Length: 266
Image (cartoon, helix red, strand yellow):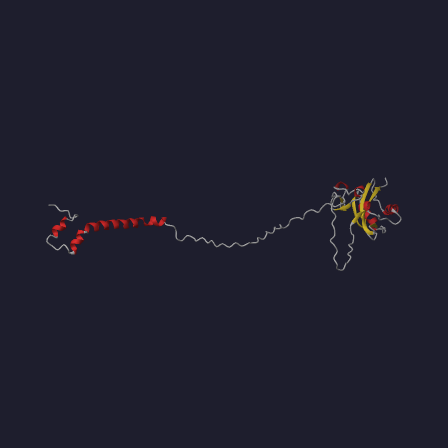
């Protein structure tokens, strides 16, 4: 008879006539169930060992940051950003004056064909100011109002008026002793015409009558050559003092222009 050692039939043959109460019989009898249990437990442990990395990846991270619900809110004052001033920027142009201003052409000694800009006419300077450029006045210009005077001691500061006025817009014009005709006569008697045949034309000269009546800043705007301009300067430097011009009751400097007609004897 063929025996299957897996089954318990062989146990009865081996332990026939022996004490079956002995522990070896019970152990061998329960061997099949023990082996099955061991196989199942081992399979479970092996499966857990293989699946451990996958299970670990599915578990939530225990090092996650803990949310702090205790939040304190503080009011922060934001300082406004200061505007950066760009260097080397030209200042804004000044507002137009209330009275029209006419550009004063600086006298320069030059020949007639080299003159690029003529001085303004007397008619153009009437009721206008003289300046470095021609500016159209704004009759609606707002006059600046002085700030209220404080309670401290008052010191009167008198600013000397060194502006050069034109004869067209001045209250009291400067005058030569004896009148303007005497001045023309003085120039005619002292001016030496160059001995050049056929010399003819006009010499334009400007000068400033100072507050003391002396003549300064003598300039030849146009001459006809042959020393005619230099001779005009020489004569005016010998001129006696004038009666100075006045504006608002004060002596001021006044610009005067003089045309000298030259005509040599033929």
